[in-house]
Length: 166
Image 1 (tube, one colour):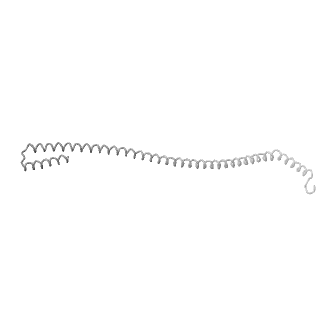
Image 2 (spheres, one colour):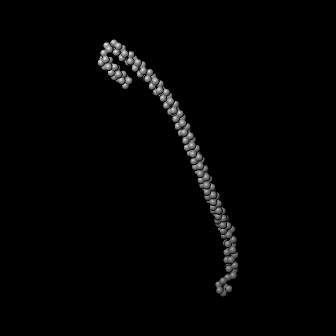
Image 3 (cartoon, helix red, strand yellow):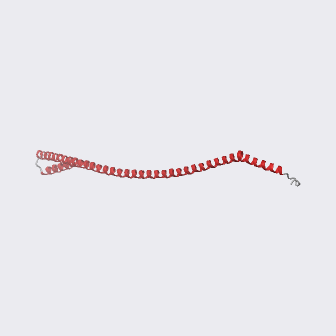
C-alpha cells in the first residue's frame, strides 16, 4: 500500500485520532447538547400538561359559571313570581279594605242624608203650620167678603208654593 501512497501508520493514527475526537465530541459536545434537548423536551411536555390542565379548569369554571347563572336565573324567577303573588294579594286586600271603607262612608252619608231629609220635612211642616196660622189670621182679620176670601186664599197658596220651592 505504500506504493499507492497510503501509509498504514498514518491511517491507524488518523483512525485513532478520529476515535479520540469522536469520544471527546461525544463527552463534551453531544452529551451537553442532548441534555439541553432533553430538558427542553421535558419543559415542553410540562407546558403542554399545564395547558391541558388550564383548559380543563377553564372548562370546569365555564360549566360552573353556567350552572351558577342558571341557578341565579331560577332564583330570580322564583323571587319575581313570589313578588307578583304578594303584590296581587296586597292589591286584593287593599281593594277589599277600600270597598269596606267606601261602604261605611256610603252608609254614613245615607244616614246623614236621611237625617237632613227628616229635619227638612220638620222645618217644612213647621213653616206650613205657621203659614196656615198666618192665613187664618189674615182671613179672620179681613171681612168675610167671599171675593176677598178667595183672593186671600189664592195669595196664601202662592206664598206657600214659593216657600216650599225654596
